[in-house]
Length: 196
Image 1: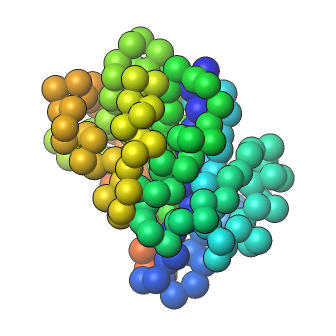
Image 2: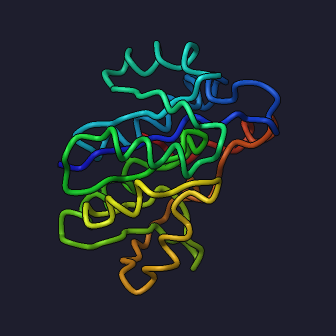
């Protein structure tokens, strides 16, 4: 089983409000939903990590799409804490695809390729386009302990550097792996690449 961990516990200080419920794309669904559906296309289960400041707004959307959520009480300490919390509360599985909730443009085909790489036995799977790596990232179960020990705001970047030799690069044609929503202007990014 592959589990998707969607990190949605950030405080969105640069955006100024809860960016994850802002409408995005041609159907006007929240940013969160586009990110969630991309993971749902490739994972047997999706677990969304939310924070104390935003869970009340986000959880109805998450439950509406049949996904589970978990509240990370220490989310304010950084992405590493949120990711470690998500891994600790994940069911037993072959591996995880770690997605960021503020990256709604990631194509479903990208997450499917990452899941396939984990099923083929790769330890770490990272999407790359034009020689530039992006998100989401896949990790096999062998990294469970290391992922659960993450702290601070660096996320899994240090783990990827430490195990650079184990990375399986997944070549994609997906501009979404490089686009996140940091400020209101980012919502205007072209959505010509379909998410579903």
